[in-house]
Image (cartoon, rainbow, N blue to C red; front, side, top):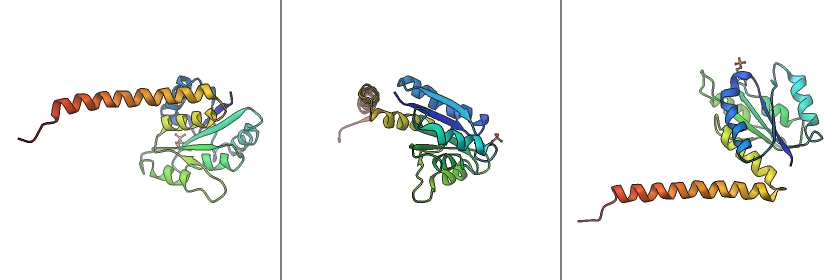
Length: 167
Ligand code: RP5
């Protein structure tokens, strides 16, 4: 199976990024985890991206906050799918990172999830890998079915408790 590369701009992003790691583990998708910054270690970030396809990666997840250029800088150096996680920082609550990550110029896409959306980033990466892996596709479907069943259980509970007929 192809693996997923997870890159964060700083180790201060790790508390959010950990959810992506655990989610990929739950689905049995192998990943490697790195700290490379578009601004502070630009050469290492670029080198990772340039080599990623031949190194066996099928998708890359990039998490960064503030002027979050990491996902874009990685996408500039590979045609692998790149998923960006905008990280919430204090001053602008993550809107800075969201706009920096999502507003890519035509030709260099970054699939951007919500602010701090590490779980969705991992699920999207697993879905990309699942294109060539039927067993993984089945695990993804099973997880969705389980979630749907739990919501329908809640519906039954809440509906029974609060609904009433017209008098
Ligand atoms: C970004 O700047 C990082 O991704 C992080 O979210 C933010 C702050 O970095 P630190 O000052 O905590 O290292 O590049």
